[in-house]
Figure (spheres, one colour):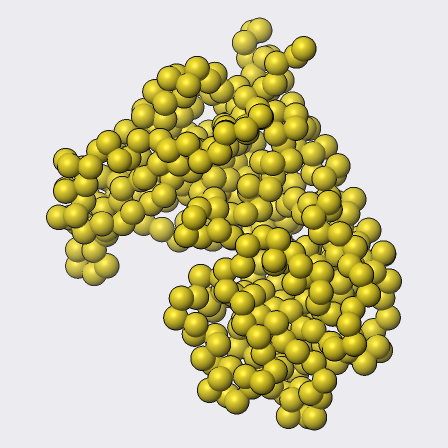
Length: 409
């Protein structure tokens, strides 16, 4: 029996006990790949500390920062470890203090990678390839690992803004991108954005993975029209645009609907307070940090999913809704434009409250005709299990074949 290749996955974010939804899509990719590869996931829980707290942790709690086993099963092992970071002074006057803090944090990161090598050796794990998700800090760690072990790595970049950090960190980002064997992006929009930031390294548009075995074709909806909005409190999500669109529908007398808002990372419930202050609470239900099964159920039960983001490198929630055969109303926010067509949804200009409301109304009234089966097929053969596995096989084989070629020279 052929031994499985061992892939070390270094995600910059991964689901944890207190943040079950953060990086869930990376976990689902790993669970797909484990059928063919031996996957080892190492993720770091970052703790930003003041100088005194930082020194206390360094000298008195070092044992608590060892690698903790999170998941152990056939083809799939996950460990986590605490990564200490010294808080950077925010004032521009403290430039050198900020530079010093970044230098210390980079040094600690290198020490952490040495510990990672020792941990894998203790577990008798020989890594064939490293796959980092997002260059900061997964790609940076992979680059340090390359220098220590000589193992090639690839990076899947999920974020639009790369060089929005300090000079010291940006320098490490540039090195990580330059040294990676393959750079993957999730959309042509993201590819363009990276080029505008001066990243001209050849990259492959890989898309994202949406599990067609979990996101199944939905059954017929109930009579009540349900609008689903998945978000978190950040300007980039265009939350106020969505709420004002619903407000305009209510003001025009359209009240036979229910809005379901799935919110992540909003302990202060700022979005719900906005709705309450504008007298719309009777039309809304808010749900916070739901587990994966419950969020999938909500997508399956909705009548339409709405996205009003200003920028999306991919648009995962939109793709998940389409996989369930649900029509969408979305702003033309980048990556989403590559999957939404006149057959599966309605695209509107960014920030256009009136157009969002009109799009929802077209679907609610039946003016927009759609076929759930066709909607599902529009994404199934691009981002479903078979399609994504084939793309990742090709990427891994390409990198590994280049490694073999180098060894034979």
